[in-house]
Amino acid sequence: MNQLLAIAADLVAIAVLAFGVYFPRHHRRDLVVAFTGVNIGVLAVATVLGSSTVGLGLGLGLFGVLSIIRLRSDEIAQHEIAYYFASLALGLLAGLAGKLTVVTGGLMLLMVVALVVGDHPRLFRRYRQQTMRLDVAYSDEAALWSHLETLLKARVVNLSIKHVDLVNDTTVAEVRYVVAAAVTR
Image (cartoon, rainbow, N blue to C red; front, side, top):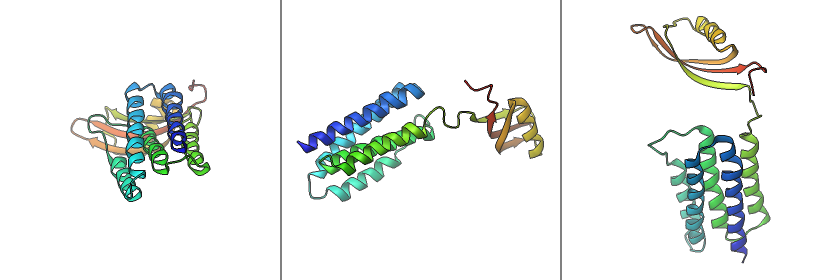
């Protein structure tokens, strides 16, 4: 019975995370399917492993293998990796614990709350990041910095020049900047 409570807690946590937090903020249906599918799969495997004598070591090995899997077909953003990691961890917690304890439930809640807060649209909402290809080859970083501030109408806080092509007269730079308060929605 207690194992059913752990499974129910996992299902509630992944539903809140995928349908209540991730999708309303990022609108990627494909990743909602991935997060829930990974969670349920890991929950099932971890539940079986948790009931066997080799459960913990094998479960941690499984967690390590699954956590390094990168989807080769699509690049995913850092915040999406966090959701994948949480999906994996929620399934492992519920499956390997075998029962819902205060600690297990608290850790599951902590993971969901961490993503709710850390990925909240109001947190650092004026900060942006772009990779830009410019039609001028900038060899002077200060000049590029000034040009980007004018172009973006924002304060540049970090600049990394990725490529300067003197033949084709282009510059590729990754820029992090803060937009004016009037520009944010």
